[in-house]
Length: 274
Image (cartoon, rainbow, N blue to C red; front, side):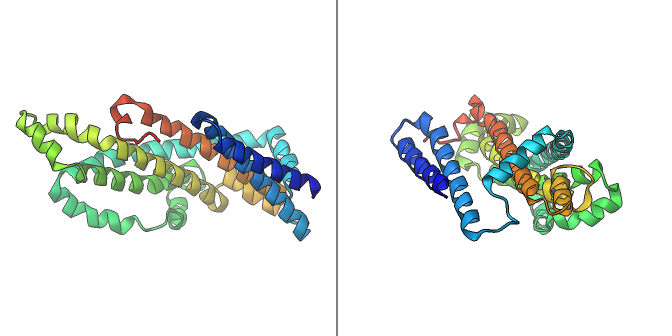
């Protein structure tokens, strides 16, 4: 208990230090201090409640080491990333061109937007029985679910990005003789790219969330299946929480990777530097 209190005080000091330092230092100091504070609060709550079921941070750390040493973990990580990668890129390959067409053509928008908006609210989890029926238990079902969960955010975001482009920009380009596909390539697509990248970022987060949920229900491998298996194997909630933390860490890495697209000169203008 005393150790947890000291760690919490140390974290509070780290937060204060982070607020007083430069912007670059704050990027790592503030999240680190806040994470330490949350771990300390987690430990204090576990000790105060006295539950033998929910693991303490130390027990979770031992389970995390056990996962890292196991040969099974890396296969489950690769399985989840494989499904997410294929499903996400397929969704981007279909959703971005379709969204551009729907956003650019008013008639296409009127015809397809009601269908997209009608299918979009259906949870990808609800498609699990159909995915298993069509593809069986395996990668095919997972890729299909990731495709569905990513396709609609990408398509809707791309459509909105095109339709929200100021008419002033388009009319100015036409005044200089830029029309047709040239107008689309030189004006519409560059203006829409920042919002398209934001849509990709949102879709990737949803995809990573959905694959874990799908693997808990209808898969025989992956991180979601690992959580379900740990819960059934003698209620190993320490392994459950350790896997949850690993899922969060991988999600952070995926988000950082896709945010690197924001650094390209063609789209950097669309992001405010704070």
